Amino acid sequence: MNYLSVENISKSYGERVLFDNVSFGINKDQKIAFIAKNGTGKSTILNIITNRDESDTGQIVKRKDLSISFLSQDDVFDENLTIEETIFASDNPTLKIIQQYEKALENPEDADAYQKAFELMEQHQAWDFETQYKQILFKLQLDQLNQKVSLLSGGQKKRLALATILINKPDLLILDEPTNHLDLGMIEWLEAYFKKENITLFMVTHDRYFLERVCNEIIELENGQIYSYKGNYSYYLDKKEARITSESTEIGKAKNLFKKELDWMRRQPKARTTKSKSRIDDFYAIKEKAHSRRKEHSMELEINMERLGNKIVEYHNVYKSFGEKTILNKFNYSFIRGERIGIIGKNGTGKSTFLNMLTNTDTPDAGKVIVGDTVKFGYYTQKGIAIKEGQKVIEVIREFGDYIPLSKGRKISASQLLERFLFDKKKQYDRVEKLSGGERKRLYLCTVLIQNPNFLILDEPTNDLDIVTLSVLENFLLDYPGCLIVVSHDRYFMDKVVDHLFVFRGEGIVEDFPGNYSDFRSYEDSSTPELKTEEKKEKTTWKKEPKVQLSFNEQKEYNRLEKEIQKLERQKKELENSFATQDYSVDDIERVSKEIKSISISIEDKELRWFELSAKLEE
Image (cartoon, rainbow, N blue to C red; front, top):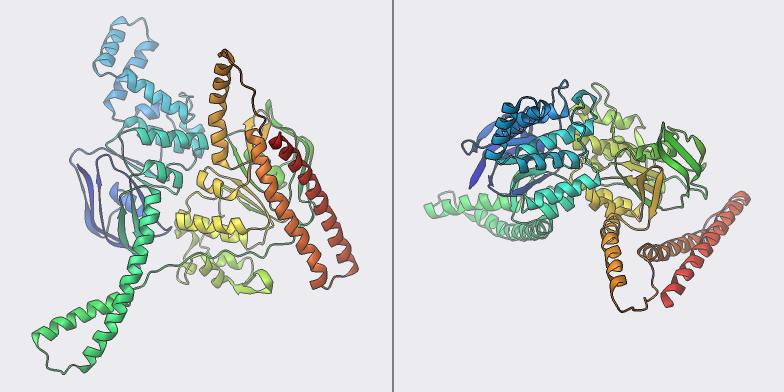
């Protein structure tokens, strides 16, 4: 059953064409993801579908009496209402019945009102609905129903908007980045909810695990054309690659045919037959195909990283609290070169405070945070770029200089750098406030990286970035030689770029987990069943001697140590070879010698631990 059809819509702003003659349909029970690069009109298309904007051409045809709910990036609420009043403010008839029942419970003396409300609950089978809506509020941490909307944070308001549309159960849910402002636990719950429910979805999201596990169709807007893929994210990647290969082959054939037909055109007399006129018409179609090409511009990230010394950052018995709420309790840690740490934990467990103390914008109540002299932080925050009224894109970069230094002594102009970040010359003179959310984030990323940090801190870097930009950023980070800390709810991103995790449990507890996010989830999910299995074994009448083996954490540590030892040995060898290739002063020789000694000690310590774990494996 067709719910909605998008027919030949177009949108332009002056000379800038966002998209032209776009058409697709949404059918009942489809779970569709809409993919496009930042700035190509994703949010505009959602706004046109939901009547928040108008297209220049075409139309949106909807099924009669179709109910649609839209989760946008800028939902507005009545600030004077409570959470509960906001939920009940909808036109959902079942919610009205539940609201009547809730009021009857508050006035037990009015037996008639209670009896009437109870009968309505029975008649409309509203009990299950009540249980489900309260579960949704609980999962999204909105269980303080009497809290005023005006007191909610931006993230809480986003979750309230999501809760409202989930509770109302419309025929069609249209979602713009539904995982933004949700923590990892909420995202996994929402993913499972969408997966099991018979819901019709049309959404924009950069969460690739979400795309993989929830969606059964992906629609892509690329170079002004719509491409549909009847499958999940893996299917989309395979079929897109096949499509690009096929298009390249067709263009190659068209070019060969064009040369042949061009020769024929040049040899033709002025007087032509009807047959030759038909061939001439075909010639121009072949010419257009032969001269078509993919507009494939990839973002180029490059950095001239400052040298990182032996001492990086050290936490010594750090204690931090806010009133009775403990954030860190005697926390100790020393960062080493090339570390890649992901930070996870529920909201309010201290992740941001930890980063603020790291960058000296906050101080511990007790203990010390010591930062090495050579450390240069690059801090990508959730606040994003500070917009100055009327400021143009290129003016943002020129604040750092007309020419930007790159590695190996090279430099490029501010304009050339912006082109590497996919801002063409025309876009460079746009005002920053006119950029899409994703384009602003891309510009902000540019300003962070051009300062050549050797310690990158990325706080929710994936919000609003398109999948293409995310892939480039991931590949850049894999080769980034400095230290890296990532706070992100994007599980795919975390899995790809981090080696171990700081798990903020609350109450000042921070665990160092030796693995990525998927490893952590596997460990967490398996820990409880393992305990149950052990209990069953104890009840059996026979006993089997357990084989000595590494615990999950020890096994991950063992694998991690192998990589770290190899990395340190490479660093040591490079420094040793530098004596033959560099013209060192006496001070340089002393410095490098100390660095080699420090690395050697670190290698010995790690090898000793590696041998301890190896010995346990051999028992």
